[in-house]
Image (cartoon, rainbow, N blue to C red; front, side, top):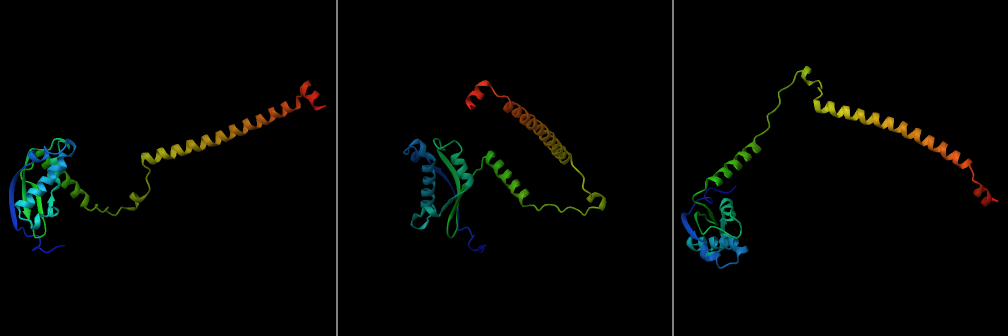
Length: 186
């Protein structure tokens, strides 16, 4: 990982960024992207980034979520953010996190914690418990297999009987000749 000196916060400030005057100049289907550009431009200017390089401004995921919350056509008119300047970049996040977003953050943290926990190792089992026991699902699958086999056997027998009868019937039909066939054969 990186040294602790790199992660040292050089400057930390809170801003209320007016977005409406900029996104009103853009067409409706470009308003949120315009708001994001406005935030980057504002932070680059006020946090004194060299050459106002907007690529050094990193917008937090939850800030982005808040901007897109009402859709692309209706971003918030203004937003309160907290900006932290590091040696190589500036992180921008929400200053006041809404309850809904707090709930989403907590849910995600819980999901990640459950995902990272190692699975509990199973204790050694006695010989009696190691014997294979069939679960109800296994019993059902075995019953289905038996039914399929029995259907196949009876189906084969049935199809053999039908084919034998068909052969017998066709042989009978061949023996019967009509007077017209007899006339054609001469």
